[in-house]
Structures are given as C-alpha cells and as structure tokens.
Image 1 (cartoon, rainbow, N blue to C red):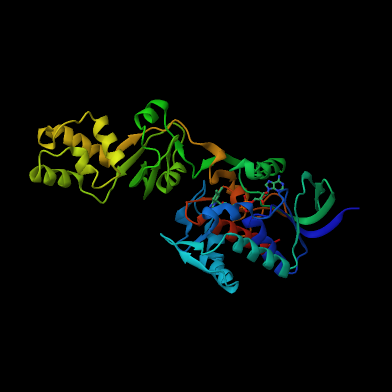
Image 2: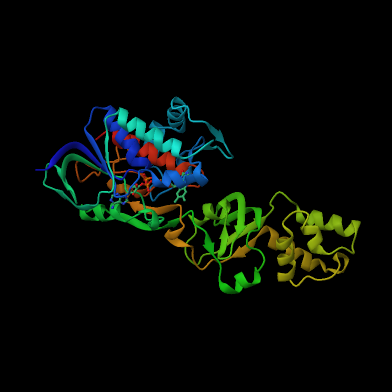
Length: 393
Ligand code: FDA
C-alpha cells in the first residue's frame, strides 16, 4: 500500500524547507524526503558557520541565468525583508557584515532550527536518510519509490540543489528528473569557485600563497571590487569567486591591484622624495611586501628608483591596473559554492516554479538555472523560489 500526501518535496535544503513551510501553512499534507542524515547541511557550513542568509540589496541584477527576467517574480514576492522578519520573530541575533550581507551573530544552526520549528508548526513531515529509487507518474499522481516504501502525491517538488560539494551529498538528481520528464537542462558548471593557475605561474608566485589584496577583478565588462587571495593552487577570495561565475575554462581575467591608489602619482612622488629607494619599497606601502617583490621581479626591475627608465615604470603601472592572468581551469565542483546552469527556466512558470508541460511537477532553488553572486543571494533565491512553489502546490 502506498502512503498518500498532497505534496512530496525531495531535498531538505534551504529551498525545500521553505517550500514545506509555505505549503504546510496552506493546509497541504507535506512530506519532505532527503537522503542525508541531517537537514540543511549546506546552511550549516555556509558563511563560515554563521550563514550569510540574505542580502538586503538582492535583486534580479545579482543573478546569472539564460533568462535574466525569470527570477523577478519570485524575488519580488518574497524579499530579504520577509526573511529577516522571520529571523527576528525567532529572535535570532544577526548583523550586516559588508555590502548588505546579513549573517547570524552566533551560528548557522539557528537558521536550521528556525526552519525546522516553522515546518513543525505548519505540520510538514521530514523523512531523512531515505534513498529515492525511482519517480513515476501515472497521469494523475507522482509515485515516489523509496527504499522504505512508496509515497503518492499530486505535487512533486524537486529541491535537491546542484552538484557542488559532492562530499556533502550533492547529486545531479534534479537534472535526471528533468530529463526523465522531457524538460531541458542548461549545461551545468562550477560557480563561485577558486581558479587554478598553471605550474609555471605558480612557481613564479612562490611565497605568495596566503597573501590577500584589494582588487578589481574583471572579465569582459563584468567587474567586482573585493579581496583576492593567492593560494597554493591559484587564486581565491571573494573577488575571484565572483568573477569565476562569468569566466569559462581557459579565458583571461584581469586584476587591478589596489584600485584606490594612483600608482603613477605615488611612484613619481617617491622618486622626487628619495630616488635611492627601491621600487618594491614604495609599492609595499600599498600592498603586501611579497606581492610588491613579485611584481617588480616579473618585470625585471632592479636597483634604485631614480635609475629606472620611464618605460619600465609605465609597464609596472600598466600591470598594476590590468594584470592579465589565464587560469587553465577552476577547482570544480569539489570546492564550488554553487552550480551554474540547471533546469531550463524556459520550461518553468516564473510565478510558481511549476513545469509547464508536466502538471504538478516543480523545481526550486539551486537546481534551477538561476545562480546568485556571492553574498547571501543564493539563499535569497532558495527562500524566494521555495516560497513561490509553496504557494502553488
Ligand atoms: P541544497 O543543496 O541546500 O539542498 C539540497 C538537499 O537535497 C540536500 O539536503 C541534499 O542532501 C538533498 N539531496 C540531494 N540529492 C538528493 C537525492 N538524490 N535524494 C534525496 N535528497 C537529495 N549561499 C548564500 O546565500 N550564503 C552563504 O553564506 C553561502 N555559503 C555557502 C558555503 C558553501 C561552502 C557552499 C557549498 C555553498 C554556500 N552557499 C551560500 C550556497 C547555498 O548553500 C546554496 O545555494 C543553497 O544551499 C541552495 O539551496 P537548495 O535548497 O537549492 O539546495
């Protein structure tokens, strides 16, 4: 005998739990199934354990998608303020860190506990450690075949996220279900991910790992001003993670080091004041010493400032404003914060996240081809898309 529910949600992550809360509040009989032992594992590790749960500036411009308009409706109907109201109702202490990013003061576990409490209050049931063997549709209802039995429901919500961090249980489940029901999937790739550098460049960067500097990272017309971090494998830090979502394998990125400093003027003034000092000494007043040393060495600059020909200084200033690097690849899904691409929004209704061609089937959260910048945007999409589907199932 199959169990019956109104709604089955596969995936007890951010989007799935929000959907369960909304659907439960509407009186729907909801079952959330997850193969993990605990719900919201990515919430738990997010934001360095403090969960950057939203961004007060979140809007459609902060998202990548083949259809940039798709996210507008859901984002407008469930805003960062709406989520913050929930957080405040649960008396969870929070703070704004920078650039509108809101974090828990204490622990990301506060957010998970809040969502579980809301689910319970809404009467939504959670079943963990449960593997899905198959999903079938008989024309009326979905049959979700699990190792412990069959559940039938008129609505099925797929909230299984993307492929990032497979060690934490991420799977391509959503894409397989989309394909099974004939829905297109936009090619997926790792996003918000550190970029690798080739062995020769890494060898030249010896000593740099651990060095961080304020940069503008550019790819084409897109740019982010935040910190970049040199690592043993290549480049990381918020500016690099942000630009990685726009970059494709083998393409060039450009860094402007300390964009707030007019290096031409700084060097000219230093030459007038004391021509005997070395150029790296001047640079090191504005960036970590090891980076200053690398930049002058790479351009073959040696000796006192007064002896440097103008063309060398020009080359250095040019390099500081537009340092071109060509990462051969990224660190991939192993360390990526998100998965770009996913279930094609052309197949979904933007108000409800329902598949146009398959009544009762919904996709929400990271599984969908909507990916946010770094800074709380991805959770805001999970809340907003989960809320949208929860109103419709
Ligand atoms: P999510 O991945 O959260 O949940 C999917 C659920 O489905 C999981 O519980 C999983 O176990 C389950 N599942 C998967 N396959 C299944 C299967 N076959 N059967 C059953 N269950 C299955 N974003 C942000 O806005 N602020 C932040 O601070 C961070 N920080 C951050 C840090 C790190 C290290 C990572 C990896 C990611 C972030 N993110 C983030 C991104 C954010 O975590 C992510 O976008 C959301 O968790 C996506 O929510 P979803 O509910 O769509 O998927």
